[in-house]
Image (cartoon, rainbow, N blue to C red; front, side):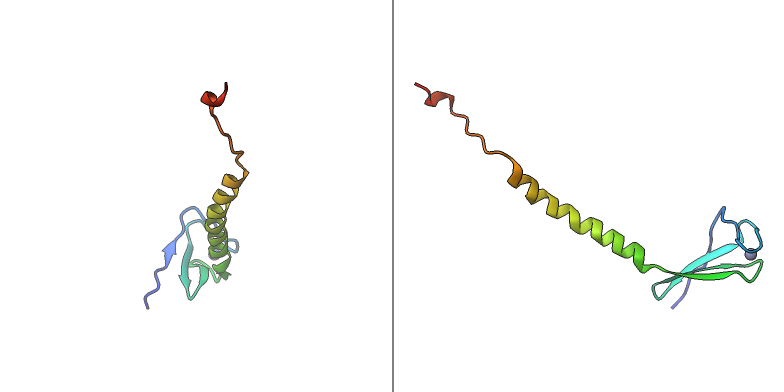
Length: 82
Ligand SMILES: [Zn+2]
């Protein structure tokens, strides 16, 4: 399984303060970042972003039927008047 490490443009390393030295990649649901200029290395869980995205998609379809139930029913029948 090939892992693609990409440089993040404009990111400053928090340890050595050098710009454009941070590489980032994802592997097994974990996001990694490392600096090629010093020993900086960190890992972040990617699962939080996926949960937010799923919640947004699930909530939207549920709002549509609820809105239809709240609409008042109007019966327009002008010809029914004597
Ligand atoms: Zn660094």
